Length: 290
Image 1 (cartoon, one colour):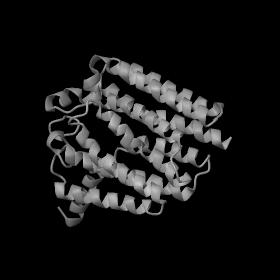
Image 2 (cartoon, one colour):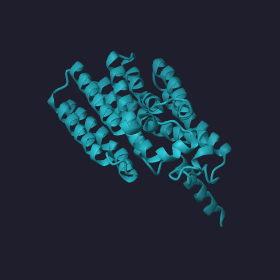
Image 3 (cartoon, helix red, strand yellow):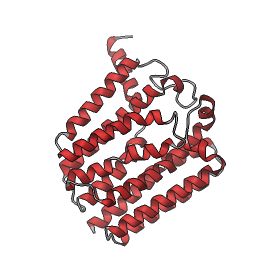
């Protein structure tokens, strides 16, 4: 194997470690953040701030994936879906993973330094949430709730960056994101439930047990209710609610996918949450454009 081939293989391993080959996680982070930027900027956010947040989202999601794999390195090799991850099969060393995490986090923090002081302070909280989330699977019954806070913390940061303060509606949107994360990550956890039980990892799919499908649908309902409340608070028009209705149709379709708890369909439902987030964003941006 030539030196060039070795470098290409290593870069490929880094890409998979950061999950850049699986952009669903980036999208699930981006939709709430983009919605918050739109609302905070009343439909016309500063495009420099938008660029900073989009780039930072990609960087921090990538760093979060590496942090997660470092924390789960003892377990990933025992789980069917994760046994081929670069850390689990020794394509990448832990030292390399730690260095990659630091580089990604420092670049993201460097971008935040272009924003105001409140946003910089909130970014420190966001980093703590991202770094500590993998550990919550050891002791929290529903770590997906913590994930929702970590994945949604771009919402208060967006308001802080554009308005200089975080209004109450931002926290309502963050709470909506928590329920959405519980919904989609429970679908994801339903795929790994058997393996998680064997190795002692906590998840909402295990906690909800036979009520897992019901819990997912309740979380979708609460998500939509909070988004509708936010729309009412912001005096948004009918187009926004059309977008919410389209998102509801996605959630309803997920019921028919997950009700039999077949693993491939549960994973398909998880991936389908991109459309849920997209339709909320589409309704919002169209409302502002009109």
